[in-house]
Image 1 (tube, rainbow, N blue to C red):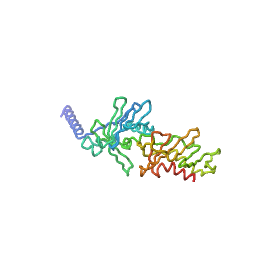
Image 2 (cartoon, helix red, strand yellow; image 1 turned 45 degrees about the vertical axis):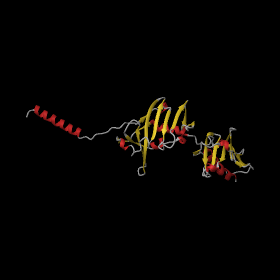
Image 3 (cartoon, rainbow, N blue to C red; image 1 turned 180 degrees about the vertical axis):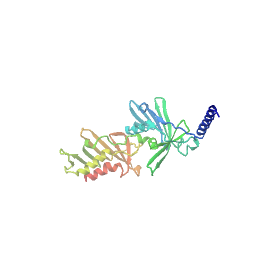
Image 4 (cartoon, rainbow, N blue to C red; image 1 turned 60 degrees about the horizontal axis):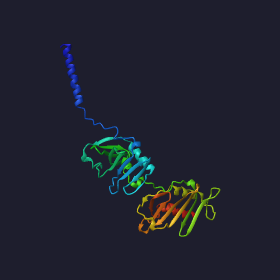
Length: 310
């Protein structure tokens, strides 16, 4: 057997080997590095439809650098913190795994239009991205969270690390300002509660000691705790249907600040509220009216003040 023949046999065996390795290799499905990757500074409109379809979709629109939130009936300036968190979640979304390419599995992973949170982002009239976020799993053993999503123009279902479902399954109230005031506890000089022709007040003396209206010193730790809690208090349940013109405030807490300004918390009693008969309104957050029971923000604002003075 000459060298030419040996060379041909070697080449044939090499070709067979390569073919067998290639043909026997399982198919590898590649997935994109990112499902969503956008410059969020260019986004000026976001449409959110929560999983619970009983509520109205949320429209977030940026005008002159300010984000507004609307549910189709009411428009308010959006909470900057909520917008920042949303844009952060939108910037880059990387898939962990391709779960299925079969539309019949959409319902299993809750990525149908009827069962998912829907997200659409625009820059002007141009749609930047759109997707559905569905089922959420949390593995207690590994303490890891997994969300499932689908781009709105594709069949593929992907798993994504993290709390994506919670980031986008938000209703109108999540983007509203829930704080009663932006003032800080160190700004407070005097508090005066008026109710039923009664008036109770506390103020800082020249030495910085909190005193009551009879100039008697108050417990410094308890007073500081009350004032700190008061200035950080936020409402939880909005009541946009409350008609303040039909009621007079039952109680008012006036907060005098060291810049001479006054913030007023007004409390109305609405007996039709049954479980939550108190309505609280702040002059520092004029678009919001909050419902409360006796253990909610009413207690933190009014009841705790009365207990402090007593």
